[in-house]
Amino acid sequence: MSLHGKSAVITGAASGIGRAAALIFAERGARLVLADRAADVQATAEAVRAKGGEAEAVVGDVATRAVIEQALDLAEGRHGGLDVVFANAGVSGGLTPLLELSEELWAEVLRVNLIGVFLALQGGARRMTARGRGGAIICTASVAGLRSGAGGSPYSASKAGVISLVQTAANQLAGTGIRVNAVCPGLTETGMTQPMFDYARQRGSEGKIGQLNPLRRAAAPEEIAEVVAFLASDHASYVNGQAIAVDGGLSSSHPVAPGRLS
Image 1: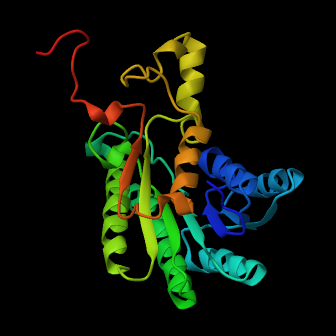
Image 2: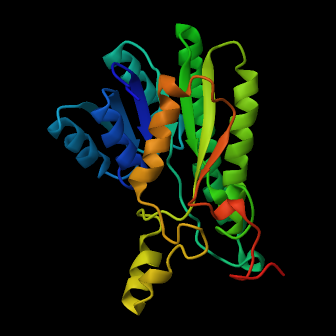
Image 3: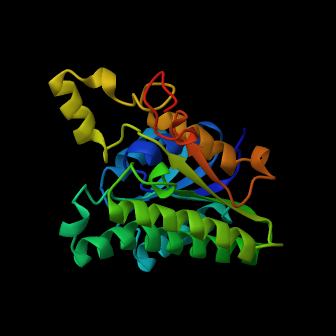
């Protein structure tokens, strides 16, 4: 699944899935622009360069048009075009009960998780359309966007919105050669979920993490990033408008008691 020579922008690349994707993309030959509001994105770029890859870092709020346009322009200017956008940046919004949620929290989660993805998708698609060589846009959604039980209300709604955006964009970009897909991670150990993993380890209940999926474990960021790399590659040339769950099988079943069907 070579990405040799492809120019890619990855948001949310300071840690977690975004960082893992940056390292995998670089190993397969992509030239990268990495963006995140956390300054640690510079460390990701340095890690890529230390392995012989090519990466530039942009520090800023990627849910603002100015920052995402800066990253996209940098990719075009340095690499002569844009082939891949991985719109990955997001926030969890916590697990505040429905009746206690504020409109300010809703607005911020939707701004980062949905409007930020829209800005990356729109900006990437404009450049790819103008270039006329197609491209791949991958967005990070979540199993929380498929059904209840995997996140708070604002987070789940924002990720359902990402899935809908991917589907509508894939169709509105018909004939351009631009493929738009979403990856829907299940429970994955990232900076966003780290407090939960740390708490389970402190309690000695680490073995219960991911117990609801058939693989009985959580994912590593690299396992999600491998699917993203596939979607970015020419091997996924006929995959378009899809929301692919990478969740150990969690979303394949209705809730059941182990060993019982009723």
